[in-house]
Image (cartoon, rainbow, N blue to C red):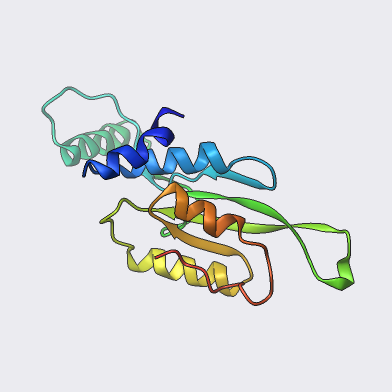
Length: 166
């Protein structure tokens, strides 16, 4: 919570706020009530224990050679939803039109968190567009305030796919 309270002061003093601090504040503050957000780490890993000073490629090559010498193989493991998917994913509860009066449904959420000068990569743009076109809500948030505004805007057919925050 400390990072959330300090944002305004940090920005007024001209200090840059790290993306990880923005992400943590969005997750901690907005993960209540009708909104639920979960961290979505995306990447590839090869778990090894190595001596300092070796390059990453040397370590990977050594692991592959060792595995082959023992009749096995080394393989990278991918994790997360997909390349370009948001840093935070989840849902928000929404009430849908007259035909579903009183019924609550979940709308898929995807939040790509960027620092003030962070760039949205092409695969992230594709993800944002895809989710919004499918009826979910995918946004780019550079601050807690922007995320709060975008994620708490009431659901309506007019706003589906039109919010980006960037």
